[in-house]
Image (cartoon, helix red, strand yellow):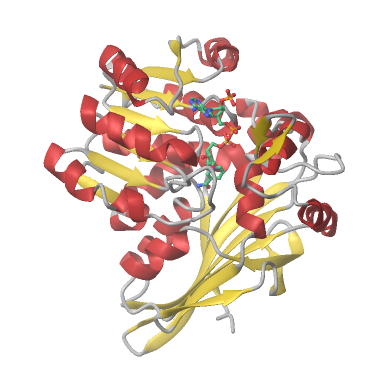
Length: 399
Ligand code: NDP
């Protein structure tokens, strides 16, 4: 049996704590640590009430390596599941190296003052993890995460070679508020307001933010307009899927969301460079975050479904065909089960599943890996067992 230390008591941390506590085949200890202790207490209380399990909690500032190393030496977890913010990825990786723990996250490292969306700094630690005999799995949420595993699964089971991948992320949830982001607003707004980018014939093609859109008819949701964005899994998949000719990422946004976003950008409230007001330095996006609803509070009022998946075209022998592999998740069902909405649920279930696979040795491989570099079968089986069943169907190729 193994132990996991989860860092971050937000929506994703809540779901992952609940799911790890349910994974009795792997974990006999689940510990939750975060910056604000009452948030840990609330989650631990929920898990105790629903599952009858005790989750020890701790306060930690994951920006301080010495504090983290002390916590890791005290708890001695087999695996650290980092579900705080991408700003802390490197510090937590380094603390894991120092304390001898395996590491998993769901988002690539971001410096607070410059949106980068790249893996370079984390990939640079591959040698260190390999030498220490430790495993680090990067981006083990839904997208990145399950979408990467869908691609690896398609390559393993359907195709000799994959030609094109389109990743489609639709959140058709309605929370009834004028404007809110369904996960951390800083990260969400950074993602949407940067230039778009996709990979074709061996090079990156840049677009203006939200320049291209098309309507997709999402199973169990219906037609929705999706916009071409850059998303971090494009970097690793374009590198790791041999022979790939094109990969794009599409995300749906309502007209209402885009109207608010336009005003936010016109006012400069999305900017990450700090400004000085009355002697205090603050990044406008941090100020905005303080005004917006906490995503963790949206669960109780969100109705509708998410649909995230991959449309993949490739060849097997002389035959060229397309598969659509996707999951549909219901916000209200996710909330009834875990107290968090589907965006947190679809991230927390895979994160907990990845932690279980590293902890039980299935995904134990010294070094730093993206999800598509690991066997997709046990991961996709585990997410289906713990709440995210998925579909794998024939489809038409996309132009
Ligand atoms: P939230 O903002 O709801 O939660 C983040 C939690 O981390 C909060 O409890 C916060 O504490 C804590 N935290 C922040 N800074 C620190 C710190 N320095 N030390 C300790 N704890 C800290 O985010 P979400 O739960 O929505 O998302 C969690 C992660 O999952 C993010 O990295 C996000 O990018 C990623 N994600 C990945 C997805 C995927 O599919 N791959 C999809 C959605 C999210 P406090 O309460 O004090 O602020």
